[in-house]
Amino acid sequence: MLIARAPVRVSFAGGGTDLPIYYEQYGGLVVSTTIDKYFYVVVNINSSDSVQVSSSDYRVFYRHRPGEQPLWDGDLRLVKAALHEFDMEGGISLFLASEIPPGTGLGSSSAVTAALIKALGTLQGLRLNPEEVAERACALEREKLRAAVGKQDQYAVAFGGLNAISFTSAGIRVERVAMSVETYEQLQRNMLLFFTGSTHVANAIMKRQEEATASNRDGAVAALHAIKDAARETRECFERGDLRRYGEILGETWEQKKRLAAGISNPRVDEVYELALRHGAIGGKLAGAGGGGFLMLYCEEPQQAAVVEALEGAGLYHMDFRFERGGAQVIMNSTPRISWQRATHPQREYQYA
Image (tube, rainbow, N blue to C red):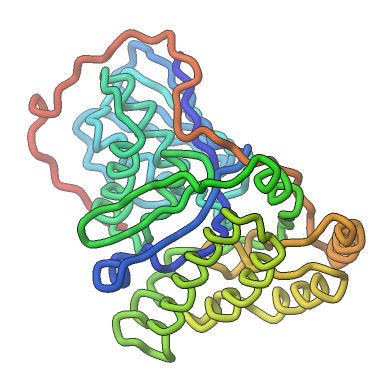
């Protein structure tokens, strides 16, 4: 048996500047951290000539036999693409489970991808470092599946911890944010997450954002410039311990983010966000691409009880969490190495859903 896991993440600032359509021309910056909610991949070796996959989150089962032409569709499209990438055609079963519902803005899709790459790579004797895991995850999602996603999530969950991630046409750099232990602990105590009860389809929102950025519709590029500037200031706030100013930045950038594409917010989200501000939250935003999922708030401790009571009264669900310093990793491995080589398989065609 082999068990791999990858954490999900929360993005403090800079989301949207990690799309190649923007950063290849202007450069991007995202400040984020991983948290202690994980996606797990459990692998068992067997003598079957097929690959079997079951998922507790989607309540689905998939079986792939050698020679079958893969169709990367449905809820397990990431899994199917990863199996194809590593030429896994038989002899294993996978069980997938997550502590976070999919489509909630915490980077769960990239946590799936990173955990799969770490697990399947380890089975084949590959010692993939965080950068290699992140790059393979980006290639699988953006190139193989042609998903309209940025690159912050893959790097965040592969490396783990609280980082400033810079994106340029020349490459991607991950740097730990230099902050005191006291500031780190205070930031952790002041961040609140509430599940809105609805999920989103991030790919559709990101496609609209890419289109708006490419055509600079409705000032999308100017909004992204402001979001990137806010990420720089966020890093400075963390380093000097000015967390209240960060809370204000969070609210300011949420207004910028809503300019990027239709569907990022909605009347229900606007209503509960204003409710949180009235009860003492300083700033907030929807996590991830928007449209649903988790509402993230910066709220100082004296006001937290009132905010929690108000939002839970409005039908939201408060989730406890802690920051996480680790990234994608194998946490148990008692399996033998599999010596399959990609060159032994003929070139296969594949279909996009």
